Image (tube, rainbow, N blue to C red):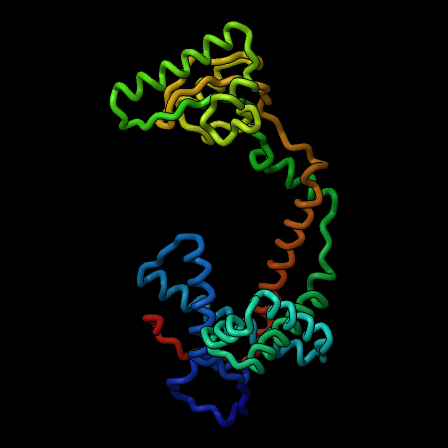
Length: 312
């Protein structure tokens, strides 16, 4: 909602948390932004205490101020959103919801009408177009910068030592009685005897292993240290390619492990990561320049904030 600057009250209002060059940011806007942030944190399994929530609310308000400034600048620059592209974005959003009612539920949860949602998407597209034209299209990253980053951050590009192993598992619960454990142990010992007599490991795994990997002849693929239970890992890394371990007990039961291959620690070649590094460094530059750009807009803007210190 936009109202003339002269019509704004000079004291805090119940319905607004900031005014940016006369444009009101409402408490509903802030609550919606907080909802997005909290939903993201919940997906990551993070819970915030009262102080962290208060700081997050202040950050959410600053994000809204920044977005409003960028949107206003997009209008100042005469940026027009292509209506066909806008309609495509809205169609794509609706397609994510198999039923019309689910889309309506989303609007209700976000406290938005369909027109308001369309305006939000239009705003987002105009703002992105501004950032692309004013910053992103002007950013370049040289081959020298990419190489220097790679050479200066070698730890990021190290591949740890890895083992490819297959196994045969006879399951037994760690809390099982001695008779059950003895029965499982006897089974794995008989399989071990067959191996020693020259039987094929993959064939025995398909026939006897009680792990889902049995369909692949027990093949577990490559793994690094820290990905398997300790006893299994120690036996695998201690064995040579082609060698079968002795019987290994873990919380899953009894295993026979065959090491298929080993890869020593190595560096990911520069050529493999070059394009990803270029993208990363480009985005880093864009973000840095965007922060400076917004700071420049703030210096010229009239911003009133009504969010009090305790974050309410």
